[in-house]
Length: 144
Image (cartoon, rainbow, N blue to C red; front, top):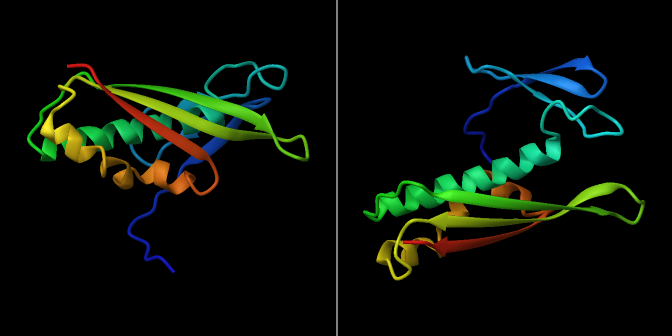
């Protein structure tokens, strides 16, 4: 069994239909989630979009952290994420796969980048946690 290192709690409060107000455990402004039509009104991102941005953000942050630890200071990293919805055998919608492309403003042959490509994904909490059930592919492009 894994040892708990920390935990947090969030709250969701139904506003109308499938729209929820998300309350964070810190003094951040809450935001709304909603399902797209025909269920909801698209008043906010749905849970699949929240998961996709969480995966991409975590990977980008891990890459930036690794590059900075190797002496490569970067600014302007971007991430593009594509999430694919599929139907399972029971015809239920599921997340089939997630493709993430990170663009880092570093030279293609940067020693820091070459070293990080083998390790940075291992430190992404979200990606490594969902990989057991969702196919996540990552591509890093050097654009320096």
